[in-house]
Length: 310
Image (cartoon, rainbow, N blue to C red; front, side, top):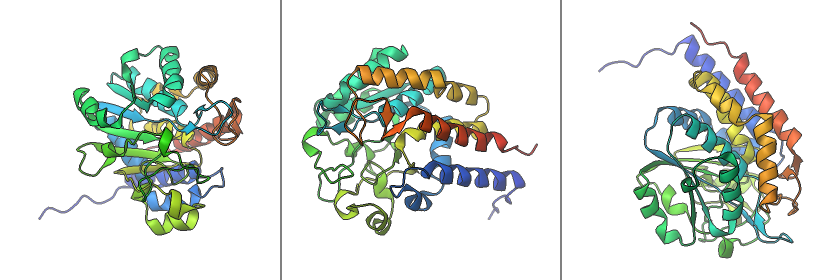
């Protein structure tokens, strides 16, 4: 039987880099993500690696409806990261579908239009029964959920504070079933999102407030844990410095200061609100954009400091 190749110094260095990226990614929000991250170790490398090597269309899912806000709308966390990823993939010639539901559609529609992407990439559904057929018709091979509520063990979905969101949230979990036929990627920060079902229940129950109620039962093949889900696009941009140096400039441009400020302003014009405060302020999970950009810079600096062996 052939033996596996021995690990090289370069392999060890890459492993160390991704471990450092995952640690940095989970820090900074004090909501339990740092305690969950070790249980999803390797998820960032697997997700980023798949994005560089896969074929077929990629469906990006997002949209967390803040029904209790004075003016209910999609929250800023999620859609902005999805659009950064969509813009990068589109610029690299990949077929992309952005999936959300009707309550969150105005924000995603505004972001798609202001990014100059084809309007047809937005799939805003009113009935979850249409989901799988739509994905098949668009030749989707990979599904990637970022900050999208997942169904809990009781079949309902919840906010981090335990609010029942089921009435306002289409169930997209069928696309993330192990037998769906799709490669399943996911990212989240609170334990209640699609993908978090990949973690041990003991970890979710121990480290997430009201975990036994709100924890998502829907898993993924590769799960990225972030202190704030918005940072997922930053982590992928950093990962590409190691995994796909030729593509890295496109990813860095997608999360540039100019693009980040433009997306946040566009989302607010469409009515988006901060998911923590429920207010239409230029913040994401209660944090100013400058705080998020500092996290971006920290992740990119970690990757840039890694010098691959020749």
